[in-house]
Length: 283
Image (cartoon, rainbow, N blue to C red; front, top):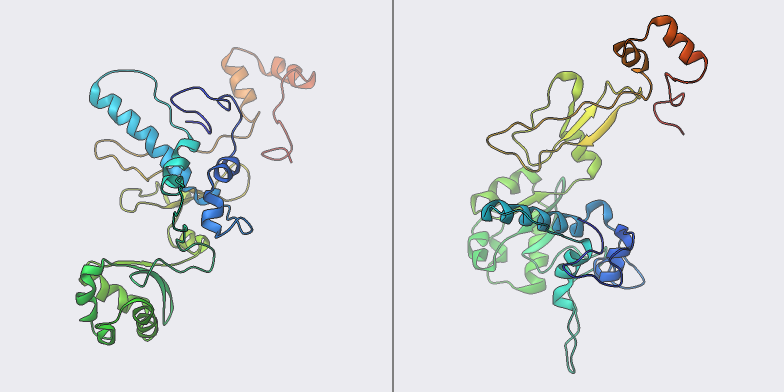
């Protein structure tokens, strides 16, 4: 899994890769940002990274299915090209690529859109064929027969009258997509499991956060839990944090048969150290 690798060698096969380089070269940063003047860097929520990992997982699955070993390569550039494929065409008379893009855009039409409720924002996703069922919900009767911008305005006005929990209950009755919007910080605090309270439960949710509040660095370290894939026949384990460099020097030397006096001499002579730096990691 690399940045520029592909099934066949090319002029950039051995170049060192970096997320932003790949994003920029495929045009996805300009696409998300709305223009070349407002590119949107989104390596922290990398759609290309996710697809690259999916491609690698697919290759592993195929190898297991076929029962044969081999080498499979997946690259971020190739994954980016798949995302950008609808825009890699040009011909005389081609209509402009005018998909909604940029930071101010709230959706793609009234049925795939961010709306504001009385106590927060949410994202609505519903098929057009289910619009009649949507119009039957209490409080949304006024959208019946509307289309386009009129429908969007009517939905926006109606959704602001009730809280998120109210709309979540109603929309889930008709199997409509409903996702409350929150900051990463809010999601982290909501799904955070401190390590000091025992082994985190990683079986229920598709994502979670673990707080190493007994970290040898002397500070709390929050990480995303490794539970995106939850196997049925095996257990997810979270490795404990690595100890500070040098903290086990005496124990290791004692295990090799050195006496306490010999260990003290090695430390005094600078042959062995009990610490790489004053802090857990050097500044």
